[in-house]
Length: 112
Image (cartoon, rainbow, N blue to C red):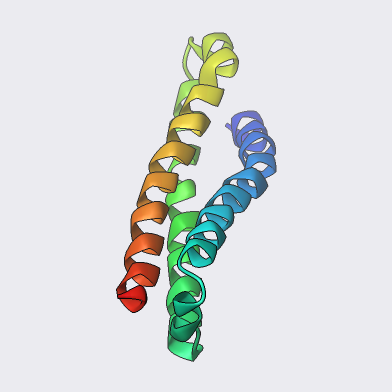
């Protein structure tokens, strides 16, 4: 169990940086698209809301850990090591779609 947990941490934490950069890039992109009206939303409440959404996205990222550890403890470990990148890519895509909708809703509402 210890080896599987260590391997999971090593794999997923290195990719968390990429995950956060992608999501931050989406938010910045939509802020820029709706600029200058999007700057009207910049206040303490909006910053706190964005912070909470970022924390929530990182908590959701942790859903990969139980799946990874479970797969590593099975006889499918070699196959899992070969294809777990697919789970990462799908997770980033789903999180990116959700982030897009949130950012669009946030910045679009002030542009009209």
